[in-house]
Each structure stands twice: as structure tokens, then as C-alpha cells.
Length: 304
Ligand SMILES: NC(=O)c1ccc[n+]([C@@H]2O[C@H](COP(=O)([O-])OP(=O)(O)OC[C@H]3O[C@@H](n4cnc5c(N)ncnc54)[C@H](O)[C@@H]3O)[C@@H](O)[C@H]2O)c1
Image 1 (tube, helix red, strand yellow):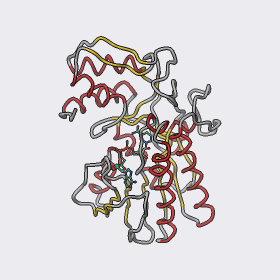
Image 2 (cartoon, helix red, strand yellow):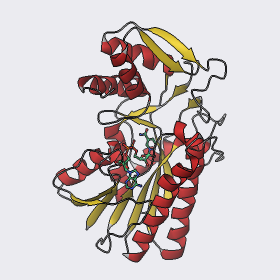
Image 3 (tube, helix red, strand yellow):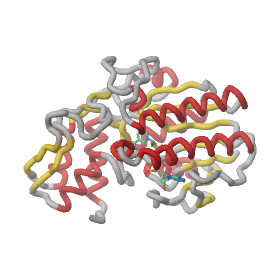
Image 4 (cartoon, rainbow, N blue to C red):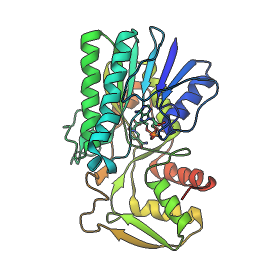
């Protein structure tokens, strides 16, 4: 059976591809290489822009891991149409691919942002879905499209609502942003918001193990994937600075709103009880995930 990874040259997709290849699976990557650059040579590669079409021949009964998207929440406030194309159109095209080629299953990487700014923390899957960013709205829309195709065409699915995923090969997100800023000027670190935003992080290997578990399930449901704790933006700034050997002056932008950007959810911790019952648990907490991720990012030279 073929395993198709969209966005397989990107951060999470490339680690997933490596895991599938090393367990002897036949893997095909579909990616337009817009940001992704990590191609596993043992996987078949289709260079394809999924905003335009998904005209690729895949074997019937394939499992599709659909990760291709623009994961930048911040830019979805201003590049809305482009985000719609990258996040939603790609998903419609992938569900069409699944329908036409009789795929057995689609696994989708959704996000904690579909819940918006809820008071229920830890947030269970049953909480109200009230996203506060375009990215969150589009992820929720994608979830609905996948559920719809499943009910009409009988394509199985699992939806994973990820907390923040971090670690080597990631070229977006707070750890990468801080390391990049410090490598440019170790004396000053700009922090978006008041630094008190507090969220849950997982290291990429836990995201991959959840995706692999999802491939073995047959539930047609969603489940949260996160850690049991959180870390604040100020703590992340200290961790990254320490690892980089820097003692920067912290400069806050938009300190009053407390949000880093329009649509920033200030507090996020997901309930992972359901994932636990399904057989998944994180192997480390947010602080260790961030520390490892900072070490990964510092090891690699930056293009500034
Ligand atoms: N990283 C996180 O913290 C996080 C959290 C929640 C959900 N997610 C979701 O997980 C998935 C993977 O995220 P990531 O962090 O690895 O992102 P990434 O940017 O590293 O990877 C995305 C990949 O998709 C490809 N791609 C983008 N648009 C495409 C298109 N139109 N056609 C074909 N390929 C395209 C890119 O070239 C890249 O290789 C995304 O769907 C993201 O929304 C990520």
C-alpha cells in the first residue's frame, strides 16, 4: 500500500516521510517546494502545486497524509486569499484525488487554533469551535470538507489537532524566529506581545508518532495532540538566549494587547485524554521540546 505525504518536503512532512521510509513503506511526496526543502531520496517525488490541481496517479487503497499548507497564522490576517488557496483549495484538491483514486484514508494536520480563545483549559475535542484567525477558520473549513467527503464517498479519515510543533528543520514559529533575530543581533530581542502568552509545544517526533498512530485507527474522528504543560513567550526567550549564549535586551511590540499578532491565541493547552485512550502520549513536555528545538536551530546556519 502506498503512503502519500503532501507537504513531505516540509518540517513535519519530511520527518514523517523519513519514519515511513525507514519502516519499509512505499512513500510518495507531493510538494511544490514553496518552503519545503527536505526530500527523502528513497521516496517518489511529485512536484505539484496543490492549489492548482492534484493530477497525480496514486494506487487505490493509498493512505494520504495531507500536510501541505501555509502554516503561518500571522500572515493569514493579511494574505487571506493566498492562505485560502494554500490551506483550503489544496484540501479540496486532495479530497478529489482521494475520491478519484479510491484512497482508503486521509489523515489531516489541523491545529489547536480551531478552538480560538476558549476559557476551557485543558481544551477537549468537544469544546466550542470559534477560531479567531483566518488560518483557524480555514483549518476548520478543511475539517468539514474532509468529513463531508468521508460521509459521501466512504473515505476514512483522522484529523489531528496539533499544539505547536517544534524542532529541527522548522523554519517558522517562535523558536526559529528568536534564533534568527539573535543571530542577527545578540544584544536585542524583539518579542511580539507582552511575553506572557502561554502555550503548549511538542517536539516533532511526538507529532510523527501521532500521525503513525492515526494511520492505524479507523475512527473517522479528530483528536488533540499536545503536551500536558505550557511555556510562556518570556520563558522561550530566556531559553533560546541561554542556548545562543546571548543576554539580549528584551523589546516588546504590542505589549498592551498581549497578542503577538491579530489572531494570536494567548493561552493554549489541549486536553490529551482522548489521544491517551487511543494509545498516544507525548514523550516530553513543552519546556524540553523548546530547549531541544533551540539547540537544533542554533546548530544550523541562517540565511538572514
Ligand atoms: N508546525 C506547527 O506548529 C503546526 C501546528 C499545527 C498544525 N500544523 C500543520 O501541519 C502541517 C505541516 O506544517 P509544517 O510546520 O511542517 O509546515 P512547512 O511549511 O514546513 O511544510 C509545508 C509543506 O507544504 C508545501 N506546500 C505548501 N503549499 C503547497 C502547495 N500549494 N502545493 C504543494 N505543496 C505545498 C511546502 O513546500 C512545505 O514543504 C501544515 O498543514 C500545518 O498547518 C503545523
